[in-house]
Amino acid sequence: MNRFSKWSSCGLGAAILGVVLASVSCGTSSSSDRTQMRVVHLAPSPGPVDLLIDNKSVSSNIAYGVPTAFVSIAPGKHDLKFNQPGSSINLFDNPAENFAGGTSYTYLFIESPGPAFPGNKLADDHSKPTKGMFKIRVVNGSPTFGSVDVYLIAQTVPPAVAAPDCSMLNTFTPAPVPAMKGLGANAASTYQTLATGTYNICITKGGDNTTVLVHFDGLSGTTSPIFTDGQIRTLIMKNQIPITSTPPYDTITLTDLN
Image (cartoon, rainbow, N blue to C red; front, side):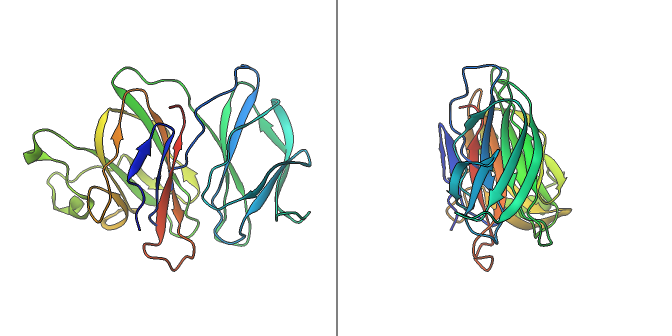
């Protein structure tokens, strides 16, 4: 079931195997030298996890695919751990994770194709785009699928030249060009700055625009999202749980600014 039908002022939610847009809280620290960090749990196998910073519990029972609120920490190096809930069993431990002052981070707890649970620290960009523009980045949070291509296709006026739905990418001449190409597992794109408006979003197998993994194009109960002036968004593709679900991927939305 696709739930990428609601884009709220503080985030949007949707479910389809492999894409996740995580919602970010709408506030930031008033202190310019503090560090903001939130966590998105993207490892399908271990169940909920606890976050410890310098051996102190910060967030407990972090659920898969549900972003935490931002926490404020002092800049510098910190011992960062993800444990099984209520235990001292480390799934991930970096004793010297460095955080810059005055910076916001989205920290991904991820799963490699093997048994390891690495982390991926993403710096958020809260600088407001110019008038009439919005910014978006995409994270391939699926540890199993491989690289993906992401198409952000603006719907145009008049309707006679409307953007193709995702199933028609290979029928248009010239073929639409992916905004993010070859995005590997657990990797994040850079932010793209685009004109505001309504967009069809298609995520396909890398190099194959006929294999659509995720689509937001008005078909099968989906809605094409509308991006407004000054918005900053992060779209994350993740595995559905259980991994035998249909569709196998889904998305969560993070609001990076508003």
